[in-house]
Length: 492
Image 1 (spheres, rainbow, N blue to C red):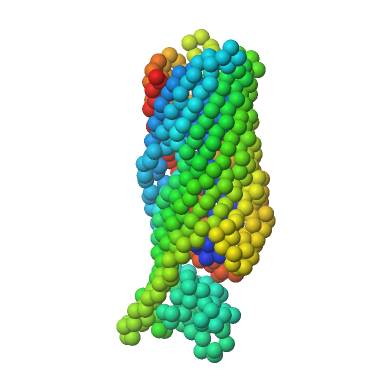
Image 2: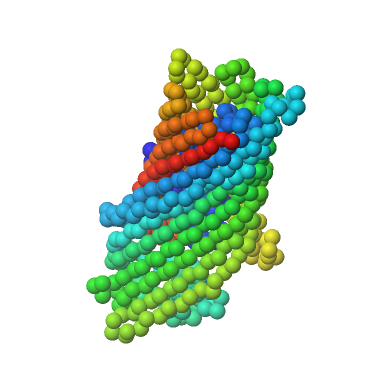
């Protein structure tokens, strides 16, 4: 299924300088992946009406009440992300493989605390909701230059008014000139209509995790209720190195340039969740939960660097660095409403479940607060424009998850499918689904589960943005995501 329009809108949402707050940031930190254990992921993360799974602390905390014995679980996620980047038919494939802790959690069970309550349980731990790791690289010859981007950012400003991150640096290293002293800039590329050799490497890393404390109680084995206090923790790093070269000396007074961008985002937040599970009969379970908005307190540390090598005859190598900017701000992500149903079955020696759930989230509820640590008029103006862009570009989404488990003796076989909606209001209503398979071996006091999940995405990308998008280099990133999750647990 084509997703070019979807990803083009995502790209255009970063049309400010790449290290500024963008609509893309709002989506990045509010488009969550709930699966933390191999059992949950193997069954399509459709566990919110089933319970007795520590990942439900982040989806439906009523599931914590379904445990009958105390339990500890530990999960590892081995991510393999291949990205093939294609520019003008020239493809380059890069790989990012990493292993990380996906979940570490425990539940402490109190049986029969009163005649009314079957259980009163406490769970603490950490669930992973996002992994940002990715490497990609492209190269090729196309018309246009990033100097056009620098020119657009500089035009209309005097040299002492230029920004310290793009236009000002380009002026410092003589990529831009103001021969007429009219605050409109020229470059060595003026009048050049040939192609320019371009290359960029991008490295991304980081994660979004949620530390949680959950309480759940089971009333007369009919109704379970629960609540979670969540503390999201964010870390995102991005490093970009973009170069242009003139190996055949086609462009007078220009040999090469390099533009380096570095961004580190860190933060912590808070949210709350409440939920219920109702057992309609012995086989049918219904679940529902509400998640409050998350308030994220974020900090961006960023800098840029521009280098310009003039023609070999002049032997001039110029470089200019930006200051390191440290900016604190807040992002409030949307509330969520979830509902689901599951059916438990037994057929001879076989037993298991089928489950389905839906999640509704309005991404337009994302809101930035850029003035919590600043009263600058420019920050307030940009904040209002950014939040208006969120209202215009994003939309509501309905995500569906389906899962099945078949058990025979101590063995389990699972399958899952996640149908995800586009958070942007243009293009296809859906993005690529996630498909998963799982295996498990469960004993009286311990268990081990495996899950494998895949998702393919095709995403346009451009290393720099211009007011006329037809002049931008268009790269196609074909991304293959594969996750192998291993969970081990024991009961006590």
